[in-house]
Amino acid sequence: MKIVRFDTLNSTNQYCELLDLTQVEEFTIVVADTQTAGIGQRGNHWEAEPCKNLTFSLILKPTFLPAADQYQLTKAISLGIYDWLQAQIPATMQASIKWPNDLYVGDSKICGTLISTRLAASHLSSAIVGIGLNINQTQFSDWIPNPTSLAILCQKTFDTTNCLEQLADCILIRYEQLRKDLHSPDKDYLEHLLDYGQPHAYIYQGQRITATITGINKFGHLEATTADGQEIVCQIKEISRIL
Image (cartoon, rainbow, N blue to C red; front, side, top):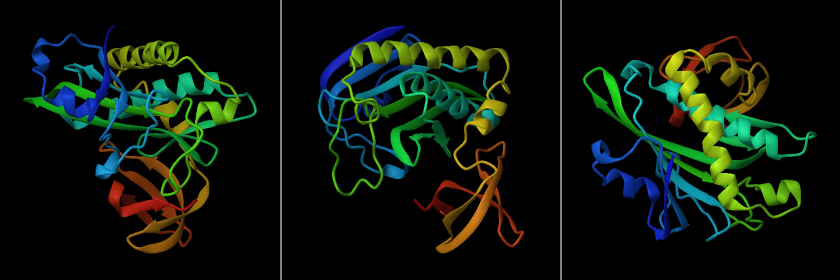
């Protein structure tokens, strides 16, 4: 594992996108104390108070992973974060994975990820995994609907350097499991998926519905059954969870 540190970057993912990844060691981590233009899912801005959180990108070379199965990488990364996070929070609290790859504690978001991949023929050649994890920040902008942090949950301050190293170790464990067995994340991902098997309110194609998540298909699309028995398959922009 190699860690490259910067005081400030616009975006660690954007920095990594400009690198010749063939010349970069796998499991290189690019971390910035301050990210001025962090990007979340669907181009959303990721807010992180300088020097209080973890904002970093992880470079992987999952050449063993067929392009058609690349959502398995999302599952493995999410589970690695989940494993570390669940070990940090009080036993009375429960972390979960909000489809497709955010991490929640209760109904509050603590971590977001953004994965970009490159292909070589039918397999992945590289992946840049951007992670924003709230560690010591305790105040957030009003436009963020449901944030939390380890400091808020645990009522103490954390050493972000130690957090990064421990988190990376947890991700590496899940990644190596994936290398050995492409289906290794499947059971645990569903087990820790927020609202799996439970009816909840959503906005689906602009309409409010109640639906129960029943699975995730091979392409990472959400499978659910509505209250009136209709089976639906959703891409990210088609459905959103109501708090």
